[in-house]
Image 1: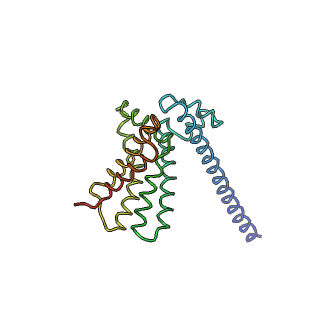
Image 2: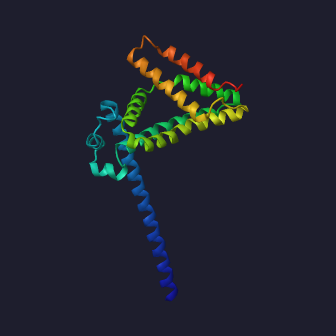
Image 3: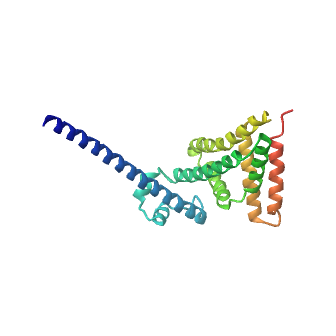
Length: 223
């Protein structure tokens, strides 16, 4: 009788632990789904109204939630913006890494990275939001330090890819990978904005050509 009771208790404990694990997994899945819906809504509202004018109420309502659901997942609008930016960056990093894995040697990796950079400066929403957010950070000096630190962490992703390719080539950059990544991103955003303002002044062909030229100058061997 004692053995039966002990075995029953052990089974009950395992069942309870399994139930808790499943419950935690379901809760995690619901939280992830909520964040994804809020990020998708934020992308729409930011693109429509801009960062400064976007209201948290509109973002939450578009996602089908209340302000309470928003604050359960994000601290504020800045936190939401960086989560969205991080989502975009992670997607691009995954695309580039998948592209590089298909390359047979270091030279092919460099050509693939150059082509990707020159061909993919077309994200209108990202360019506009990056500009708006940069202006917001400059106009709010108290928040500037924290925002700058988070932006640097995101920039480091591009720098890491560039560093990997240069190491495979057995070469070094004439500047830091952080500066290279920042410069490449800044020119890409600037040219896209000029193209959006006046497509005749800077065509898509012009953009690709200028970006490829700049990329080549950045990765040229140190002298």
